Length: 217
Image 1 (cartoon, helix red, strand yellow):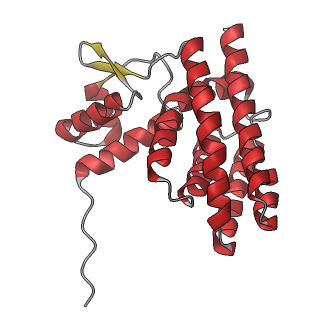
Image 2 (tube, helix red, strand yellow; image 1 turned 60 degrees about the vertical axis):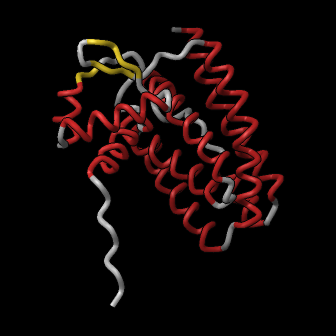
Image 3 (cartoon, helix red, strand yellow; image 1 turned 90 degrees about the horizontal axis):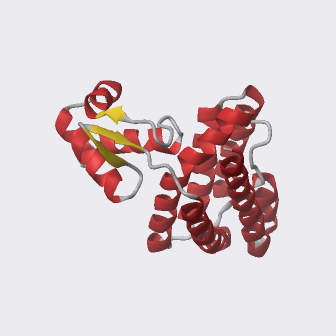
């Protein structure tokens, strides 16, 4: 008999839920929320919510505001520039390494995610766009097996995701960055360098939109 799969602890489930909320921009930069409010939204106990907040604060995705409130940090232009440099250095390389190891099954899975993303754009579904966009990149990067760089990339996504959500709120989904088709074409050809270039262009476009939004702000 196979051993039963260990049950995921509640604090880990709560962390994942809150992390997803941040990645999808459900908490906007500067929007203060109470810890009690998060307890209600997440349907969880106070202790696991506090633990999730502690972890996400350590990762730079949340900050304490006092009076039992937390918020997603509002990024400065200098911080965006720093994270842009880091993302453009890390992620195209992760994409290239992932491409070198991608199987036909992996490419099919990435294609399915991109199809979901395209449908979200057509529907104007911002949350689904945000989630599918993250899933596409995360799945491709995981293929690389570069755990340290993947962890750094995850942290950067957590910190920049909410700012991209602000753009969605202003301009809708029609002009959002999506150069995944080029990456998929390159994956099918087995051209890791072209995959890297497509991901670099995708990230650069999103960052430029964030910068423009901040300038207009």
